[in-house]
Image (cartoon, rainbow, N blue to C red; front, side, top):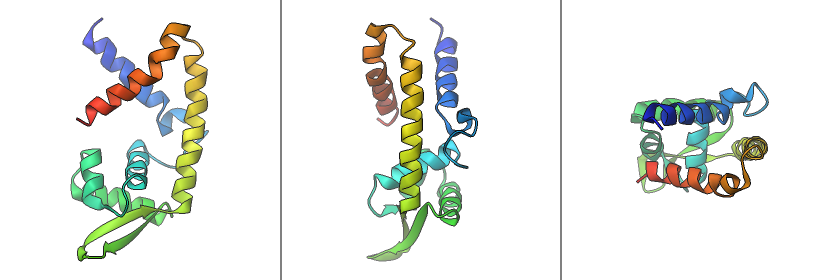
Length: 139
């Protein structure tokens, strides 16, 4: 197997399971970067914007633009950090939690549909392998 085959397969998977691959079936108007930012913020209490930039591999100004777009659509709220007013922290609103839950449900259904086409031995390990690959990216 060639590395180009693997990289193309990963791109196909990312497209299929990304908001744009849903053909308008889910995710409202979120981009993949916005969705990943929402998940990072949901999982980080009083998340500073610089944590969003690190998680996405963006500059702080790039992350700030994403945060501002998400806030303007009601998915996030911003506030100054209690001990340092210069640091802006963000948290997910109920509307943001709702879109994450909707997206998770949608992609669980898509994953189950795709994985049902795999042989049982591959099906049993596919999810775990994908999660391990994603975790290795963060190391």
